[in-house]
Every structure is written in structure tokens, then in C-alpha cells.
Image (cartoon, rainbow, N blue to C red):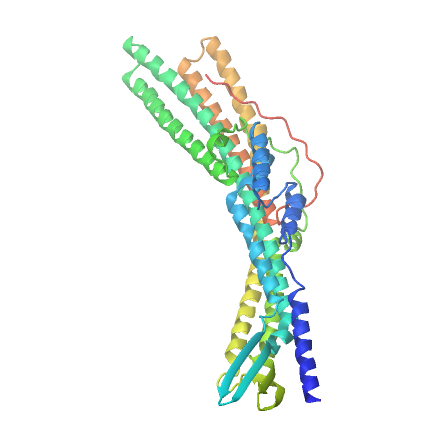
Length: 469
């Protein structure tokens, strides 16, 4: 009767091991659907994980198609999602986390030992089949814990994708604004060069003082230095964008538009943005999953604090001169020196650390949203002020100065000085507009990658830009 019961127990354990070990498998996308859904819902873009030459070739072809036309902000984000190799590398975290989940859902392989001894004419054979019974008992909870970690990894990877998209938007805005500023700096330098040359001729004819000529030449020298700096800055900002796009070779010759998108017609008045951020930010959702997983892990540690090893084995011995022997053996760790208190204390400390980190993330999220929204409002109002007040007034002054110059009421130097002031006003508008788009991107990230739904906004008329003199 004992032999039958023991055999049934061993067979039952073996069947359970095979069944549980075959349940979980590596999926085809390793959870990437979550990342793709976030990209589609919050960015309106396609995210792909390129794990085959065909997928990489398809992404490269689409990248070339998007780069064949002047690069827009939306297309820049799409190219980064397709082509940024650092982002592609981060997707591997999904595969690692899923592999850990599958591994946690499987028991270690059972053990088998065989012993053959001879004493005189007697032949003794011992066979033992063993299985970690403790791992079998804790398998469901361990699987649930790793499942939560896998879901957390999906959210964190999706958040990394949103961060790359935001960084690309910022780099695009900086690159376009820097090139636009460099063009206006060139206009200032050309005007200064013309003024310096004219002053030189007047001084040679004795109609211009040495002091006034030196002033014009000094301004020309400073304008030349400023032009060199703005050109270098434009190149640096372009390279920052290139790195995020992940392009190289002939693809880096893409064309940027001459100016940034215009300021939207209206500034949306967002309500309850703190609550919206707490619901939508992926880092907060991932933190909640981490805390839940650590709570389960703490419970598992407390449940196994006294018994850390429990192996069950089926034994079958045979001797040539004696009847066959069958039975079972149990191997258990005796908690004489280690009662598991340190493991429990460590698990408790890790859990409390994660809980405090989650609370800190929530506090920071609220503060970031408030700060970003104020900066967004200020940037919009400042840009609108430049567009509606500063630039038009400078344009009016420039027109009046030109009329007076035609009537010989002002000198050419006064006209050139006014042209420089007008270009400076437009540069101020460019910088303010750049600040607005950066602030909008920061607000989007603070809210989880997407602004709350608002009414459709139509672009306003662009400001009048001065021509080169």
C-alpha cells in the first residue's frame, strides 16, 4: 500500500511539473503591443520593433521617404520612432522581462540519481527521483509577481518611447529656430558690413569723424563674430536632431523648413491637469505595479521564512539477494541558525522604499504639471505679444524711416541702425516661439505624453518678417 501511494505521489508531482512547465511560452511580440498602442494613442505615430532584416529594411525605406521632403515636426518624431537605435535597444527589456516571467512559471528540472555497488556476489542498485516541492507550492505566487514586473516593464519602455519623441520635438524646434536665427544674423552682418564700408568712404573723403567710423567698424566686427556663433549653434542643434533621428550618411542632408510652425490661434484653458497627469503618466502606473509586486513578494518571503528548502523524492532500491525496496525521501532545511528574519526585513525595506518612491513620483508629477502649465501659458502670451505688438511696431518704424530716408531726412546710418533693431525684434519673436513649442512639449510629457482634449486650434497669420538690407 505504501509503495502504491508513493508511486502515485511521484507520478502526480511529475505530471504537475510537466503541465506547469509547459504553460508559459515566449510570445511573438514580447508585449510590444502595449508600446505600439501608446504611440498610436498618445502620439498618433507608428512604433515598430525591428527584429528582422525585413523589418529594418522597411523602416529604412519609410525613413528615406519622409526625409525626401522638408522635415516637419511630426515626421521627425515618426523617423525617431522608426530609426533611433537607442530606442530599439530599450525594447529588448521587454524580451528580458518576458523571459524572466516564463522562467518563473517553470519549475527547475527534477533530479535523478543512480547508484550501483557490488559486495561479493551481491549487486545493489539505488535509484532516486527528486523534485523541489517548495518551488511547486510557491509557483503560482512567483508567476504572478513576475507577471506584474512584466507589465511594469511594458509601461516603462513605453514611457522611454514617449521621452524619445519629446526629445526629438525639442531638438527639431531648436534646430529650426537656430537656422532661422543664423539667417537673420547674416542679414545683420551684411547691413553692418555695408555701414562700415560706407563709413570708410566718407571718412576718406573727410565727411565722417574717426570716432563714428570706429563705431561702425566695431559693430561690423561684433556682427561677424555673432554670425559665426549662430552658425556654429545651428550646426550643433542640427547634429543633436540627427542623433535622435538615428540617421547617417546621405540621410543627414535633409532639409528643414525656413521657420517654426506659427503660434496657435487660441491658448487652451486646461482644467484638473493634476488629476489628469496622475491618471495618465506611465511612470506612476509602473510605480503602482512595482509596489503591488513587492507586496506580493513580501508575502511570499514571509510565507517561506522558516522553510527555504523542501525536496520530495521517490526511491527505488534493488539487491540481487534481497527483495526490491521502494519508498520516498524528504529533504528539508532546519532553521537552527537562520530563521528568515533578515530576508523578511530586507523585503520589507524594499517594499517601503518603493512605496516612498511612488509617493515622491506623484508629488513631483503634480509640481511638474503646475510648473509646465504656467511656463506654457507664459510662453504663449509672450510669443503673442511679440507677434501682435513688438514686430508690427518695429515694422511701422522701419517703414517710416525708409520714407524719411527717401526724403533725405535721415542718414543711411540711421536707416541701417533701424534695420538692425527690426531684425533683433524678429529674433526675439523667433526665440519666444521656440520657447512656446518647447513649453508645449514639456507640458505634454508632464501630462503623460498627451494634452487633454481641447477644441481644434487654427494657426494665426504669421508676423511680417523684415527683408535684408
